[in-house]
Amino acid sequence: GAVVSQHPSWVICKSGTSVKIECRSLDFQATTMFWYRQFPKQSLMLMATSNEGSKATYEQGVEKDKFLINHASLTLSTLTVTSAHPEDSSFYICSARQDNYGYTFGSGTRLTVV
Amino acid sequence: AQKVTQAQTEISVVEKEDVTLDCVYETRDTTYYLFWYKQPPSGELVFLIRRNSFDEQNEISGRYSWNFQKSTSSFNFTITASQVVDSAVYFCALRGGGNKLTFGTGTQLKVEL
Image (tube, rainbow over all chains, first blue to last red; front, side, top):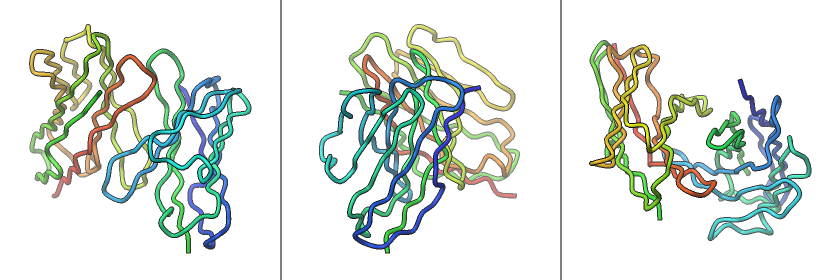
């Protein structure tokens, strides 16, 4: 079946530094990937839609300059949290759209900014 | 605009009890897809089922069953003879005409011995 690999699983970084999270589709090409953020005991909130070879589409209220998304190939999308602050601590999950209606999710990245 | 409502924030049951998780959705699209995902404590989202708007047949998969009723815009999920391993957060989600999945707020299911 379709697999999406997300790395790292968890990361602790110092305030002010940047963190990059990778999302790879292992056995299929994903022209569209999605990045979500989930706070404890809350739902998944879509941050942005990542399209291969073009700029990401951000949801309202998501800072483009803070959450940089790059989708340079059909199997890789990256999310970089720039100048991270404690309030950016969260669980980030990516997903890839495999066909007309299927979505496969990565295992998530738990980011802690100290 | 799309919306998914999971009114049950948390449900606790004793093992072997049956439990139904409710999901009510809103969409103006005539073609749409409904999903259920399981999120165990480890965090990953486990796909359970996908249903398109033209297929109202109920589905059963082992101890899991789903009841899709367009008349009431509901897509409820029942676990029969619940087990401790079923403890997780369950999300209902909707995809309409666009690419995006809209998630409900989730239902935390706790199955105790």
